[in-house]
Every structure is written in C-alpha cells, then in structure tokens.
Image (tube, rainbow, N blue to C red; front, top):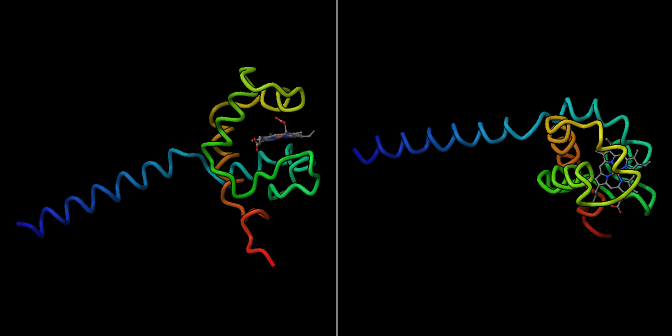
Length: 111
Ligand code: HEC
C-alpha cells in the first residue's frame, strides 16, 4: 500500500515537473529569435559591452518580466521598448528559455 502511494506520488510529481518545463518556453526556438538581440547582448547572451546587460544564465522569469515591463512601459528604456514592442508572450518565454540556459560569464568560477 505504502509502495503504491509512493509510486503514484512520484509519477504525479514527474508529470507536473515536465509540464512546467514545457510551459516555460522553447530554448531552440528562442535561439532562432535571439538573432535580433545578439548585436547588443552577444550571441549567447554574454554581452561584451558593459552598457548592455548579460542575459546568459539569468533567471527565465526575470527575463520574461523585464521584457513585459519594457513592452508595457512599466520599465522605461527607449532601446528595449522598441525591441520588446514586437514580441509576443511566447517569444519572450522562448528567448528567456534560451538565454537562461546559457552559461553566464557572471556565473563562471572566478580565477
Ligand atoms: C540596440 C541594442 C540592444 C538590442 C538589439 C537588444 N537589447 Fe536588450 N538591452 C539593451 C540595453 C542598453 C539594456 C539596458 C536597458 C535598461 O537600462 O533598462 C537592455 C536590457 C535588456 C534586458 C533587461 C536585463 C536586466 O538585467 O534587467 C533584457 C531581458 C533584454 N534586454 C533582452 C533583450 C532581448 C530578448 C533582445 C532581442 C529581442 C534584446 N534585448 C535586444 C540593448 C539592446
């Protein structure tokens, strides 16, 4: 009995877990959409230009929130307002999945 309960609970947890991962955007699609971002943020999100934030390794939720805020005007920046204006929620989630899956310079071990 206990064993059955354990198996059922584990399956449920796994099912929910894979659901939430797939609901959070497609990193491969995000990589394709990120061409427009590469000039400023770097192809893998590791911007070499201090003015442009590093996106690699950033939390996906943070990236989605930032893009939504630029689009709505809650966060004001003329460059990013223009970039976010044409993005759908799905685009934002895909881009966030891609950049968050990259190794960030800020998260590499320090020498
Ligand atoms: C022309 C240069 C440029 C391009 C192209 C560009 N960005 Fe940005 N991005 C910036 C700058 C500059 C900032 C900092 C703005 C600020 O201070 O809020 C920024 C900020 C951001 C932030 C907030 C980061 C943080 O740490 O808060 C995100 C997320 C972001 N950009 C995503 C993108 C995505 C996704 C694309 C492609 C669709 C893109 N950017 C294209 C210049 C650019």
